Length: 211
Image (cartoon, rainbow, N blue to C red; front, top):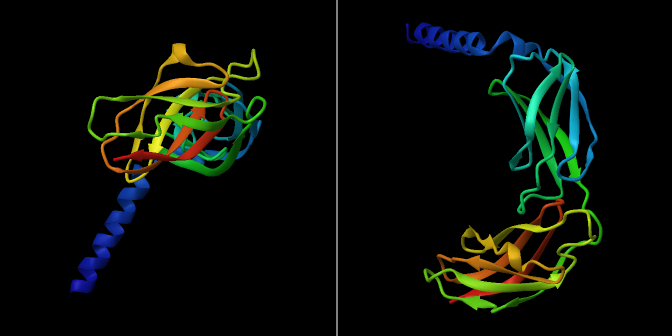
């Protein structure tokens, strides 16, 4: 008797899951997409079949959502590449989600930095106090805003250590070789500083001490 009841429950669960899946989403299929490499702001077309203008579309690039993702026609979804999240790799997984259902998650997009890679050479001061008023630190290096005319600027800063915390970049201080940021650190430890830039490039440095 217990076996019969268990089987009935299992069948009921399968039936509920099947009915809950929208028919238009079940028929949708992704076959290809492109371009597969480029900068933030690039328009990307995702090709396949079974797309509907009534679908709610979400396309993710790593940890970020694509911009203005929408169905262009029954065979194409269009989206715009967002700025790369500083903690994501340069090559990120792309997922396509229709009406809350992931129909594809094995696509890859590679961010292409605009020009020479940025690098951190010094952080001043190199240490801070936890749970204090946000500390102002100056980060020095190279290629923070080059090449000129291509819009690179630092947009994200994180400290990665016992915990991960984000900071605030002071925009008016940004030059090609230095900028100022505010950091509020909650725990004692040794942290890595990670930067994200508007063109998808990144830079990091270890050794920021909180005591």
